[in-house]
Length: 134
Image (cartoon, rainbow, N blue to C red; front, side, top):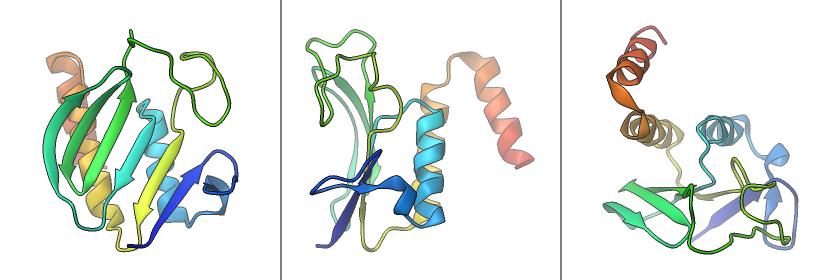
């Protein structure tokens, strides 16, 4: 399986998101606006569940997994460099995509996650209205 991992900066195993195609940068920006930290788009494996670990809540639909930091994690979370949770780790950190990514399908899963996490009926109605007029 071929995959590409994008992050905020280039390392030995991660490419800077600024070098990604515009469609992939769009996924990053939409996810970042929602406070998502990690998005994984798999080539084959399908998951449909919610998970809760020590540091993340996971939302898995079809080939897409979305991870968001818990507001009160049981242990500290670090990405690449040691930065305590809540200091510089907010927003997107990692976007891992398979070579057969369907960007539109992934955006739909992210929209489903947004709807799932929306607080209250007014927020749900606002999202539904925005989708109609988008």
